[in-house]
Length: 183
Image (cartoon, rainbow, N blue to C red; front, side):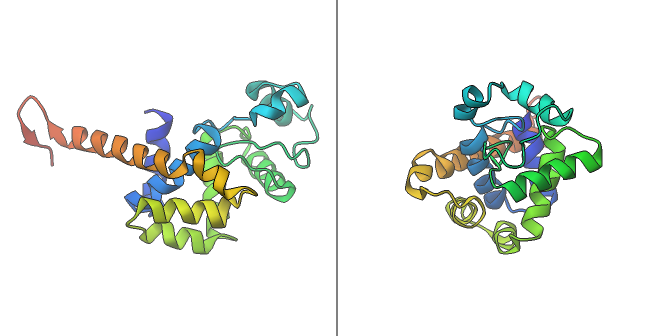
């Protein structure tokens, strides 16, 4: 199963509607390309790390400024010191890498269920990808330049993800050799 499908399945299992999952995933795609070990490109040169090297250095304790370096990291491109610290401690307590997809999804849901419960409530009821995407952008990500962030493609990525997943769901439900729906 590809990363996109793993994220979709996880979010759906958490009770998000199709529109809610697609809206959230579109924003994640615009942030990180759905890569859990993604270090903000502009910080790679500044810090002297690739995505993998940064992740490993944080995991093994060699790099100690993860919490406060303001470098965007992970699926959500976490930046704020308290959120990055909480991600690091969440992964450490689970004995996993900060770049682990499942850890980041669990941490994302923990954040949504905690300080961002209004966002989660919308994602669980949304019937519009745009509504879900906007809620994630405006209330969860809260970028300084929201107009620029919109141009980066959160809503467009969300619609593309939604269409892609729907095609896969239809393909999985249709038995092409017998031309009948699987039950």
